[in-house]
Length: 316
Image (cartoon, rainbow, N blue to C red; front, side, top):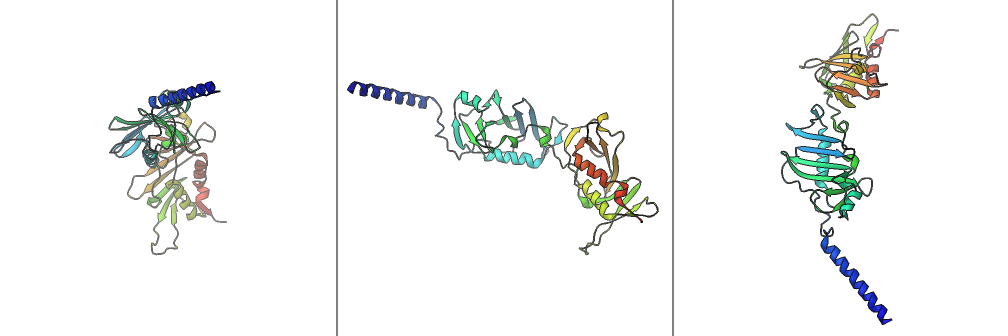
């Protein structure tokens, strides 16, 4: 019995010694305060973001003259609020719950330099400030995170879908929007529709439009014209297609076009083409070099609202 106890004691001592060696040989996650920032971004504004995906895709966002743009996509403006929101979220990340430290764990959680879900490189004045890897986290709103050059993998409050790696996800969808009150005239289908002054003191007054090009018995439907005006003012694109016209865009025979005049501004010509792809529409506006894809529902709504019959009342 005594001999067995001595053997067990020796085994326990050996295990404790091995544990101490292992603890001393690797980085300690417990030493990291979970409330400390995950990224040390220093002072000053960041001006470049490179987002890489697990499919080897790369997306570059760069700040130029105060605006975030997509240099590899015709320098098209990014949605400024989305970029600002991402940067704010990255700055607010804390170490959170520690997960692991080993090289094998980097691969397992998909935060290794050769195996990751997202790799985000942040720069300031062409200098790398931090490189963050995001991988498989715990929970739908979390990701595993590893900072290049630092030990440890941490479960942090950011989801992969909040860091998309496609240009479409970052493009400014509101670039073509204009203040509705600036629209003074719309010309389409042989009609020239002119907004009439509204008595500002009469809060119940509704927008009124007059037209030239009317035929016998036709009158303007001011409500319908105002609706068309609002649709044009609040256009949201679906995607940037490019800056070169393509036969597939269908703009050689537009399905709808109009000229919009704003107070004190050059006229804007809108052309809408039906693409060869089923139920797909291309929009071109004269003041921009780009060609845009419109959501099908929006394009068809614009075509319907812009019909001559939709804009007019006919005498019974």
